[in-house]
Length: 413
Ligand SMILES: *Cc1c(COP(=O)(O)O)cnc(C)c1O
Image (tube, rainbow, N blue to C red; front, side, top):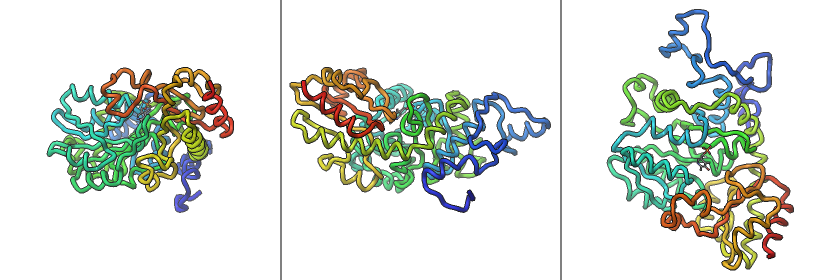
């Protein structure tokens, strides 16, 4: 396959390793386990350290197997560079460690992954000013901006209530004001949506979720889309200003977050994730179709009070989602009528597994208020629209009829 042929999403992932010479014609990038990389010429080692020559030196800052995965994620997001981390949270944490300073202000969606919400509290205690807004309306984001605002952070589809940020208008606003726009694309994955298309400068992906997909490996990534002008970003240290403008942000993140904090992805994990990534398009097609079928069935049942799924016409941002995403995602949440206990319902399900996590090949269910959103307390849950009886469903790739049957049979007490 030549670089000149422009290929589709899956073809590109499958053949990307072979774009560079691989040892012995191996069709997978091998798992390189060495921590250190030796040089015959001591001057070459010095050149690598001084950035005059590219090369690997120590496993914490880079590894050939991890680089091959980073390159795939860059292609999936149509970006210019990617840095992989041990988890998705490490990737989000890296944005703060590397790019933000005491007294900086950020605007964030308040419909957030629970651990990101917790991280915001940590960073606020360390001197960052965080404004949490309803990002389904760009006006709320605009009203929160201050001269100290360095970054706007949103997710694509919020978990568990599936609110959708006003992505295009927020991207336009950030571009007009020269503010870094960071989008956590985990819930949609690059197969359903590319944040670059709405002006994002940095994209977060938890590789643990849809990209790996099999629930047996953790990983995270930050991708630079090439759209943000780093020369205007005040927090780039003089050392990294020596780099060409497009490389400054990632150079600082690789050194100040990955190197200094050390949440590096292992080569074994990178290999596992790369294998999962090969089938993401197929898995997403099936999981999204299953989610649409389940959400429609539950919405039509009088024993169900509410279903939150962007693919339903009743969803407040259904039209927005239709314009943005290839499909409506594989996650939805619902509330039963008050006379049905949510724990009893969950215990009657035979296929769906009571477990946290999302983006797996298996269907997973969880009573949100009592588990992943328990720690934040009732007041914060109310602000995020999370009812006590809310059940989150991460839909897998099981046969559609089996899932429909399982969720229907559990409704009969
Ligand atoms: C799971 C998740 C993360 C964190 O990823 P980990 O790999 O579990 O650390 C971040 N953002 C979103 C939206 C997620 O769903």
